[in-house]
Image (tube, rainbow over all chains, first blue to last red; front, side, top):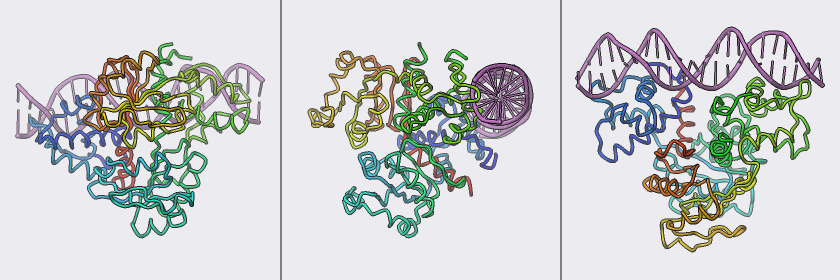
Length: 214
Length: 214
DNA sequence: TTTTGTGAATTGCTTCACAGCA
DNA sequence: TGCTGTGAAGCAATTCACAAAA
């Protein structure tokens, strides 16, 4: 077993996929799963699955496989999602509002507890009913981060505003940013960034379909 | 220069980022850009930029750098986005509707021209105004794919419906799928898949913030 | 000078293959 | 027998470093 730090980045990405599958297996009341079966469900080799998990400890039982509930808990703990955590979001356009309403975050232990927008006309608007979320003005961001001890922020603003928003988040104490704006953000090295550019994903497909075979 | 096939997968991903930055530079009327400057904007090394581009030809001018408009066109051609293309979407929940309204796709040459939903109550609803898009029933999918010669499909349905939708798409002739459902899809090897699991991205950040340092 | 394009060296990741345990 | 954990081997991607071009 290795201390996180030598863990390959692709391994961390797959950890989330293992967890997703384990949650499905657990819901179906499957008690154990082999690296072979887990790999097949995710289009990975059995060796890959074993090596990935071995970076964090010895969770398997030779001859049996992995115990589903146990491994599920362990992976959650590794990812840091064994406790619920609060998230804030900036930018309440179409995408931002869809993200606030997205049930998948809640299922995984993330709660979007605050939404902010630069546009004063949007401030005060209720943007989610279930847990009521109202749009706040940007200047309240630091106070909210402190009061709700928020470490994760989501950026859903246009490209030209994203860097400024990121700077505000970092100043306020946010440690990790999920960015949906189509720009590369520049932040301190101790701040984690994950970017999702929706158009980029379509371009990738375009390359595979038309680019490759020409 | 190499024929696509030996091109590393990460290189293809970065190609989209180069294009994004080139479009920004072009809009700012910057005429040339060095691999060093392009790399700095995207947090990549200059050698990485040069090597990536060299897989597809010799586009640079020693002592000068790359000519912005020229390289932009070339990268578009490599990605296959030099011509506009039609896209369909299945699943008109919050996320699906946000994706239909997303301007970023249009800017990059993709047009969501048809939306489908399993739920007959949603069929007929207008889900976009600008280019009017009405929700169609699933059984019309094959006909629409044929008539509008659509090759790209977006899946924005719940996890338990995603595989069925993917199967329908493939049967109808779709060649590439962008999947937002939190499941691994199993399709023929000649079908391209790109998956975006929003919760997975938050988990990755969680690991970097809490997982790594514990 | 400045900056590209590219072999060679290096680093990183995945697969192999098998000892050891249930 | 079935399956894990893991060194060793193999493959892939990145970085280095420098000749050649403007």
